Amino acid sequence: MQIIVNGAIEQELVDRLVAEEKETFARQGKKIAKIVLTDCGDEIEIKTYEKSPIRRIRRITGYLAETDRWNAPKLAELRDRVKHTNLEAAAGAASRKTGIKLRLNGLVYESVVDGPGLRDVLFVQGCPHRCYGCQNPGSWDFNGGTEVDVADVLVSLPSSPLITGVTFSGGEPFCQAAALVEVARHIKSLGLNLWVYTGYTWEELLAHPDPAVLRLLVLTDVVVDGRFVQEEADLSLPFRGSRNQRFIDVRESLKAGKVILWEPAVPAAHIPPVKIL
Image 1 (tube, one colour):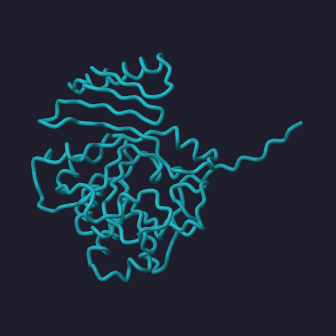
Image 2 (cartoon, rainbow, N blue to C red; image 1 turned 90 degrees about the vertical axis):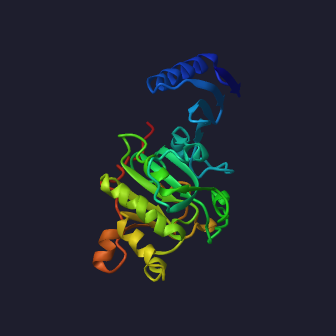
Image 3 (cartoon, helix red, strand yellow; image 1 turned 30 degrees about the vertical axis):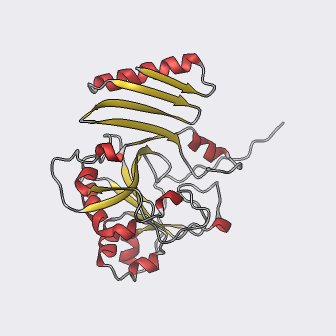
């Protein structure tokens, strides 16, 4: 096993991380070929998946790229890790093909920053909005990313029994609504909740000419709508990038015929200011 350390990481921490990962993958009958540890994440390569290596990459995530205004909530996000999958290695893993293609920018497992709870996240490829200040401009090109069969996505969700929901992000999910309807049906059949981030507004979605857009909307629990607006950006906002974006309770909004905002089941506790004596 090759171990590469890039950055000022204490040897004790390196030894502990390596031991933990070896034990984790040994339980799955897999042998680690290489571990790369850096200050901002780690990469593990396992050469036991058919003919292609599996690479698991964990990175720091959040809306903090290229900023220097880090507050307490976002620093907490920095401490959280999410797992990536190598899409090209995973393609072909499903035993049953649907023939329905989905173009993805990436899959993120066990995220805590893309909605409440522990979530798996699909980042679709292709976006017409191209918002200034977007944290994921690599997802704009409709010809980029990796094209996979929907069946390959279904077998990877959920990534663990601890997952409480799935999030579609992007890119623009509603540009691939027909394919995502199949994924959404699978998610809902498992009793998981579904969040979708979109650059369209709620009103634009309801008026959209593609019938698949409404079908996907009906399967969604919460839509986070609206383009990212740099002038409205606020690093203290949970689960969204700018103040104009809304958390919309889809079922209640469709029932009421107007926008009903989603509210967390457990509101954030009010912490009174500390008095210095």
